[in-house]
Length: 246
Ligand code: SF4
Image (cartoon, rainbow, N blue to C red; front, side, top):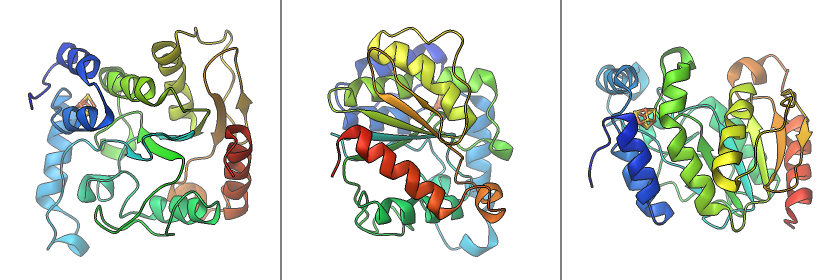
């Protein structure tokens, strides 16, 4: 599998991916953002003390879940010691603990925990991916890194387009990243003015999936009570209703 080392190569390889397995392999071999490549590899080298005996993934983290998903959950980027360690999105960190517990309560995951890539977790009717596929310092990718990574997201949306009905955007960054994906995946121009992000915000257009806003499952939100389990349950109940998932 060829490595992607420039934004032009990301565009070319994303377009060449014929299915999700193909795309995931291309994503995992991406080196197009020098700052993020340095960071993901440094974190994988230095590790957190609690994980010092583990081999970190230290690469971009592909999407995960049902290839025929009707619901997509769009996050910001992998966590340095979560997805960047385990190789699976929202796996091995506190954000994932909250998210997968909620997906399990909603009947969209077969287990409430997500601790390792081989832990048996399976999603039903749901796929999870991030707007940026490498862990960024301070969880803050630059606009340039967001744009360089966008073709991976856009191609993933195109590949699940036949079944996709609802996108749940976790946070304002993901909400903003959705509009270019809508254009790329469905040929739909973003609405003008663009709807503001908010928890419970809902947008639907003439084509493409409906969009729901949800506060990010970050510790900052869940520890402070800004986002509660009940609020997450409401979002996923609504997503299921809109997507026609039992
Ligand atoms: S953030 Fe995206 S484009 Fe940049 S190196 Fe990672 S996978 Fe590649």
